[in-house]
Length: 180
Length: 180
Image (tube, rainbow over all chains, first blue to last red):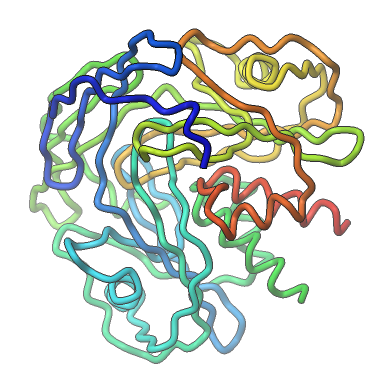
């Protein structure tokens, strides 16, 4: 890893400590010795699952997203609880949101969603081992489960029903996987 | 679009107005009549470009990302200025960060990066029409340009040098494109 671009923290001030995110303002020293400010959103991290049924359908959920003021369709996902292992969280969120249990998750990738301003890291898993379980969403979460073919999911990207990075990634990943 | 999950805003309080992001705390009424709180990060939106040279190499940049406390390798990207058209911003950021000019950008996709807490929408473009220009990064931005093959980019995903959603998406998109 190159060190040449390192930005040294001169001052760090927590502006907001929230239920899910914290907001931190930092004064940094740039590589040329000048100073600048960085606004940082601290997030606990998240998991997402690409669940595929025996019939080859992708299990998705439709959910209202307040930051966007609209509902979008996403792969099942959720925030990591403190100290929770990503694969444990993934199995839990899958069951809560879709009613499917799984005991076999394959790691696909981890990536940062918004490296310019946030440290949210999303861990993505795949499973084709789904057993009927019990839907049991969080108290303040309202979701609708849908099951679609890969072609239908691709159409939902064109119509902006699927409209987020992790789900767009998941649809491409399945397309590449099916070609193998 | 289903309306059944709509969350009505009861109260909205701006907690922080920053240089790049604003933070808003909202009280919402849930579909079952109960109330909850939503923490929202407001972001101006961003653009990114998948630039491919005549030799078929992908042009990437290595950049220190303060939220992650490390440098990662990404497709060229930047924030939208107020009122700026995405394709204008994309051509500008491409030239600033890589030195390449382009007058032909193809729209690939737009997606939200973190729909759970932020409204950042990223517009992604593709170009294989690159002309030598002048690198001229923002005053507080330090970037290193690298040009890699698709296979090298895939390896960089495995080693977490490429570590963000838009660039992981871009690598998959190019792989699918090359198969056509």
